[in-house]
Image (cartoon, rainbow, N blue to C red; front, side):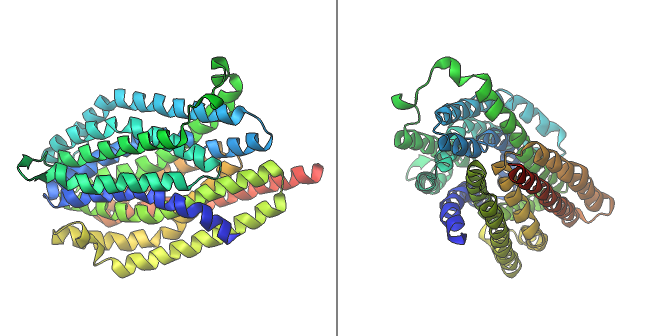
Length: 439
């Protein structure tokens, strides 16, 4: 069973890491300019990711419904796939339209003024890239829901290769052609995401004739009930999580460019381990929804136990890695000794919450496979916005622990999330057992 999880999760992890690596490549080249350009890129990316993850959240609930309908030989899975693409694109356009609000918010964030001026056009360019990236994610999630994890992997590798090649060319220029400066990094991201979306459409052809359905059925009550409502809660769940880290970043920004840069660098590094846990979480959603559709409770319980043990083993390994490399990793992204020293200190806290972070995202994926999205969204709000953020402010500003205090607050929220989602899972499993006994 461990082999099943790894075979499914492996391509998903590499694909997800591709998006993190794309951001890390951007930070690397921005860091070669100076700390101000790096801080502007980090600030714009944090705001951009709030819009991105909200749109992505809707596609996450495709897996359990496609599993269920395909087992029943029900053609509704095709409708759900098309509806997911439509929903993602609709919210992408909506997020683009409200970007001026995001730009306006910059003025009230108590960030360095020179950073804010540079961050505004960077954010606008990233927001335009939402449209192709959400199209990519919708196609990716639909493919993974049917067990196809390799297509997204190869397209992600293609996108990252293109981004790596054109990033320095657009920033610094080539031969006698002048570059765009720091904005070249944003243009490289936009171009890479466009190519990834087009590539997925060409490979999978999601709108081919044999998947078309009557126009009225695409927006039927059944489609909206099965997809839009669970998707709404899932979107808010991951938005609550990301906005908490964004708020932590803004608090770090209020403490100066050095701390903001250190926070952004460590967060990018920690995102690598998180994506590994998220790949295992995706495998959990896929297999758990399959076991539920087949009403195989014994296999379901065995799978969940092994999945939890696997993610704990992997995240402990990352914790050891973080501590071992804390003095070396920051210098891969910056030549500023002050930023590197601050980042090394934060990597110790990042190491401390690896297990809790891995557990909470894995348990969320399992619960999603059980079609339980409402309570995880509520618990995520409680964990991050009633525990993490108040404690981050208290430790960071009242007790004056600064960046360390902000990250300690995040650690407390992740502990709550892991424990509360574990107890929620036990409740759901007991309900399934009771149903099996009654039947």
